[in-house]
Image (spheres, rainbow, N blue to C red):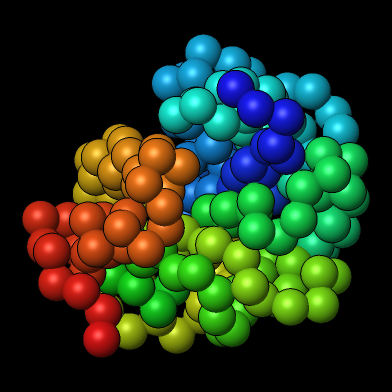
Length: 201
């Protein structure tokens, strides 16, 4: 273990129980799954977030769930990085993505925030988008007329059946980012949907 800055792994979501089992809280669920693996709990309040501290793949890791509500996620991420003396190069953000099919996953080194308000807030607060993100697909496979209503609605039973696999797969992807780097992890874990290794062009 070195004295390098920790990796700050942030899962996006909304606090309070009413949002717990919604697609928009996939980031929180992914953090909880990683915390289980590390045998830590993300319950300590720091910099507008619930955080947990651990070691993974030879790196210090901070797991965080912003408590600012989704649209203000950057108000937690920016001070959290400052508190850990970590730059954006140590940031990994996990979040739901309506542009990807349900159970799809995309690791990206940088890029626009797209239509995701939590990512828009983070990019706005940091002033750039050069950080690793892991996008978890939530599109149901049929037209979504009310995007806000969909992402804040409860998971349906067929989705709950796939949820554990998606969270494990996401945790595996983050572990690969830490152990092998994001570029190699992309080639191994990017998929259009569960059981597919099709890569995004």
